[in-house]
Amino acid sequence: MNYPTIPPIDNAAAQQAGIRQNNLTKPPGSLGRLEKISIQLAGMKADPLPGVSRKAVIVMAADHGVALEGISAFPAEVTPQMVLNFLHGGAAINVLARQAGADVIVVDIGVAADFDPSLPGLLHRKVARGTQNMMKGPAMTRAEAEKAIAEGMAVLSSVADNGIDLIATGDMGIGNTTPSSAIVAVMTGLPVAKVTGHGTGIDSAGLAHKIQVIEKAIALNRPEPNDALDVLCKVGGLEIAGLAGVIIAAASCRIPVVVDGFISTAAAMIAEGLVPDVRHYMFASHQSVEIGHQAMHKYLGLNPLINMNLRLGEGTGAVLAFHLIEAASRILREMATFAEAGVSDKEKGSVLTAS
Image 1 (tube, rainbow, N blue to C red):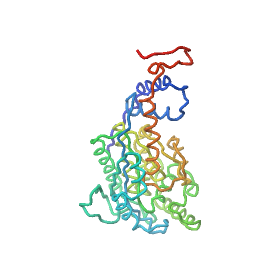
Image 2: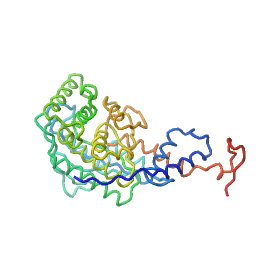
Image 3: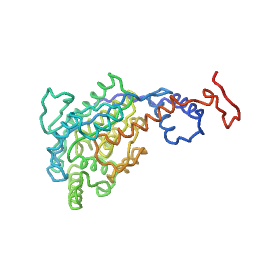
Image 4: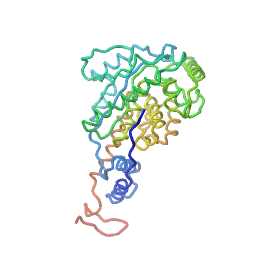
């Protein structure tokens, strides 16, 4: 499969943004990470004054064969039910997206149920009716994995054609913390027990069972840690593959990607494994309560923006982070420099005026 070229970060634009930040009416560095975010945005977007007013979250939905092993507190029927909830505007991601002024784009990439083709608002990109049970063999074929990645790339391209400044990744799929834990365990080399959490709220006995299921699936399928596509095929998920495609396509278009929680970050790991330069276009939105999430961020070299003890998915943490990223952009674009405001620059000790 051929992947698009990822453009290098525009260091000249980032440098111009940094110079402006140091001349805004504040002590340099006094707005902390907001300043750094604005400079990152400038480099990503090749624009010294980057705007992020047009925002969207892409929610990929899919089911998982491994859910048959009893690794979730909720039944698989919840996946299609929640897709309908998204479309009706009643889920947490809908509420938070409305507050952030972001669109919610819902994609059926692998739900094990059929939706009415005329259902408004749903993108029908189904690759398969869920993955296979990875306790019995590979979760999907190579062709299915590549198809799901391609579908994710196509969805992003269609969104980009309509104009977008910032993308968040979201997910829905009962049982999807299990493949995500498997991905992080394989790719980091950490023990499964160190990167597997309670997911939707299973008890301690359920967690012990979940760990055993993942260990057995890895032992059976023997995914190659340095081959992201092999990891994806053997222990991944269709929504994870689709989101990896979204990330790759967004980076190729210089669109910053705000990565959500545990499942979205598993997709980010796969995307980075396939196309390493995509990591330069990612923001980690938040630190999930899932114990493997910190290891994922360390692997990708990302520093999450917030820690609110979130574990819902859907893109909720990423859309919350939209507010901080837009604040950083607005500070850079709208705040006056010392010269523009006629304010005394402490370092120079003189009053500067606009020319």
